[in-house]
Amino acid sequence: MTEFILASASPRRRELMERMGLTFKVLTPDADEASVARDIPVKLYVQELALLKAGAAAKMTLKNKNALIIAADTIVTLDGVILGKPSDEDDARRMLRALAGRKHEVYTGCCVMRIRDAKTVCLSVRTQVTMRRLTDEKIDRYILSGEPMDKAGAYGIQGLGSMFIEKIDGDYFNVVGLPVSALADTLEREFDIEIL
Image 1 (spheres, one colour):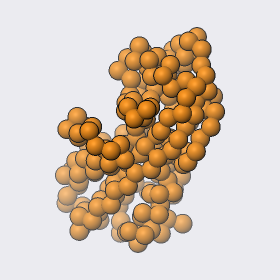
Image 2 (cartoon, rainbow, N blue to C red; image 1 turned 120 degrees about the horizontal axis):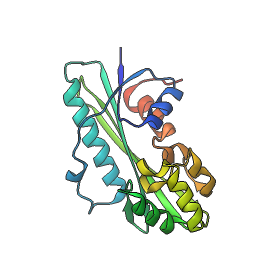
Image 3 (cartoon, rainbow, N blue to C red; image 1 turned 90 degrees about the vertical axis):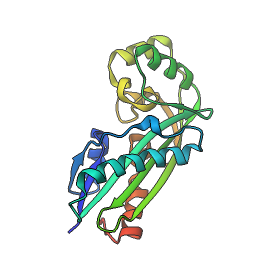
């Protein structure tokens, strides 16, 4: 029987996996994200990050031949520049000012790895998001909420940051952190696991 393992500490990814009806364990592998070169196309970069996390989780679970690892990583890009998680409040302020009133892209790389035969499938999903114009006062109040500090691009679409989103073109759940539809399709098509 397949044992799903989510290689992520993200509570948002946990919630989305639960919504998919999956029973799973959570592992938080120690992966050196700085080891992945940023000078490759963004859709490959996020897949490499997810693969790195899946590989680190695999090392922790090699004895469990029934394990199926799911790892993901989400980044925000503006004009081709990656906006990671803010390092401090000033960094969050800089990101939000840059995003305000503009379109940007959110990419999530997802990697599914089966331990028993090492079958690995990685994918990436892109969603375009338009943020409305924001005053400096609104940005400061949002930063004081604490929400931006652990989010790529310094905002959470599923929280208070939802009030800043004017338009979305693509998978909403991808922006939250896990492309649910693409993941379900991959599990069904590539691993013969019926989700519903």
